[in-house]
Length: 324
Image (cartoon, rainbow, N blue to C red; front, side, top):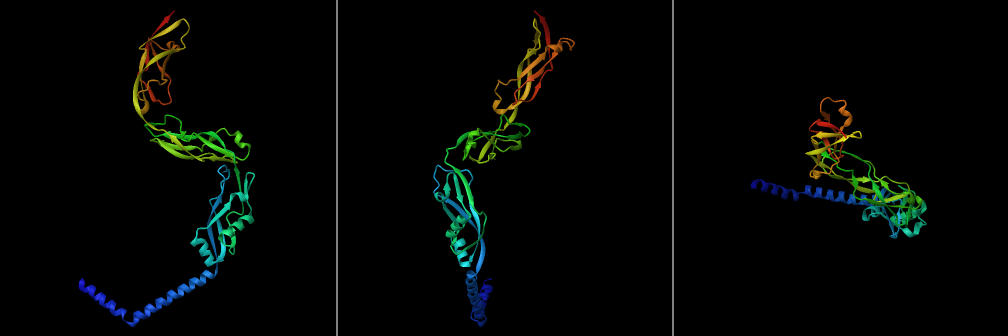
C-alpha cells in the first residue's frame, strides 16, 4: 500500500513539472477571468426581478388598533441594472418604512398609488423602474377606542372513543376577548362565536386552536382561542337507589319491597365517589292494573348525562296496595 502511494506521488510530481499541466492551468485561469468579465457585463444589463418587500408602518401610537391588518410584505417587480438589483435584493433586505402620521387621518390610514410608488422608489432606488406591485394602494381602518370585552361562545361537535366520556361542554381557555371597531357596530356585539370544532373518538383531554368567526368591520383580539375538551375514562359502579311511586291516587299508597334496588352504570373516573347523581327509579301505579300477582315493574325515570349504560339489576319489586 505504501509503495502504491509513493508511485502516485511520483506521477503527480512528474505531471506538475510537465508542459501539459501548465497549459491546463493557463486555460483554467483564462476561463475564470472570462467568467468574471461576463458577470460584470451581465450586471450592467437591465434585468427584471421580483422582490418581497417587508412593510413596516412606524410611529404608530399605542392607542391605535388597526381594524384591517396591514400586509406583512408587498411583492414588487423591478427593472434596473443588475448591479442595482443585486444591491437592493442581496446586499440588504428590502424594507418599506412608512410613517403612520404622514398618511393617517380620522380613522383611516390611506396610501395612494402615487404615494406607494414614491415610497418604494425612495427605499429601493430612485432610478429603478417599478413594473408591478402586489397592491396598487393601501387603505386601512383604525380606531383609538379601548374596545369592548365580550365572552366567547364555543360551537362544537365532539365525541369520545369507546370507554371514554366527555363530561362537560368544551370551553374556551380565553373566556373573554376584546373587540374593536371604527363604527357603531361594537355597541351591538355582546359575544363572539368560534368556528365549529369537530373532533371524533377522543381518548384524552385535548386543547385545540380554533379561530373565531369574523365580524365585518370589527377586529377581534385574539382572533384564535384555545378550546379545551375534557375527556375521562369510564369506570363501572353499582349503587342502591330508592324506588319512588308515580301516579298514586289520593287516599292510596304503595308499599314496595324492597324499596331500594341495585343499579349498575359507568361513570367518569373523577366522579366515582360522587353519590349526588340525579338517578331516579320509579314504579307506575297504573301498572298494578296490568300485572298479575304482587309484583310491579321498575323503570329508570331520569338520570344524569354523565351516567352511561344504566342497567337495573332487577326488573320488578313486590308491592302492597294500601287504602287510607
